[in-house]
Image 1 (cartoon, rainbow, N blue to C red):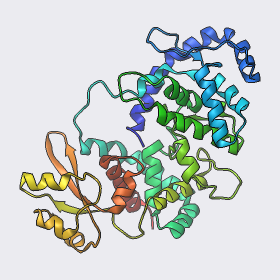
Image 2 (image 1 turned 30 degrees about the vertical axis):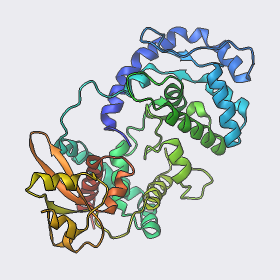
Image 3 (image 1 turned 180 degrees about the vertical axis):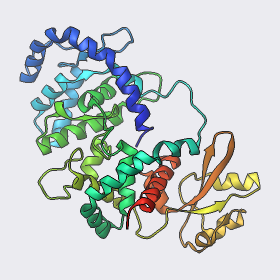
Image 4 (image 1 turned 30 degrees about the horizontal axis):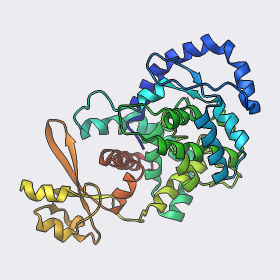
Length: 373
């Protein structure tokens, strides 16, 4: 639900090394403060989180007033123990690497669909996807029977998101979310309120599941498990698909499969509907621009697309529902175009990007073609 995970985690590992060195240097000074915070002592010394590049690499939040206030309010809304929440957040650490990774890249490169596709639709990911498909086949078949979501689509989502568990993130989720909740970096639109709501959802999930918040790892933005669900997404859409009493998106393939398929179903996936059709865009620039205004939101019937000069294939002309003219840039070459259906739009609910949706679709198609009968 983000930029390329391979790029993100490579940057994250590089950026995290200085923090690791600093942690070793100050480790001897932390146990007493940790113990006091864990006991919820009202007189524990507050520790202000870092706010500048010259600040220490690791700062324990301690009993900072705004953090304590948040914990009490979240506990009242969600019904968990406020002292437990305060103690957990007192252990959270400000992470400078998280603050850096959440920022936009210094220079935006030109969009290139062919290059983007090549990162995900490649032999090793296809091989591992086929292996994962085989290991989870009973659950994938159950999910398809229940919601109509094709197995290859679920497998492709896991492949694009985390390379089948290779890249789920090495940050403590509570650290990442606390950093972005209470010390969101200046220089971009402030999203601290969004991350506070995710932090609240994370604490509720840990309380419900009986998990130790200090042990859960994820991405720098707080996404978790093989499908990289944010905490609020876990609460809304994740399922205990194998009925073992827990929702586990890190190690339980059944829950991963059920949760991803359920997510798509809840966002309107329609069984047997294609995701897109071949289309030739209008040669007239103004007509093309009008069709591109709604972006990936399906807004035009086949007849309306034709009226604006777009040419669909036979299957597209017969499609009864609305479609969107989707434009994919190819660097200096001519863009590619598809006519996206409502199912294409559903895939973008996972990540608001036509490039992401097409990468998932193309990987799913490759997996289906390569899978032995």
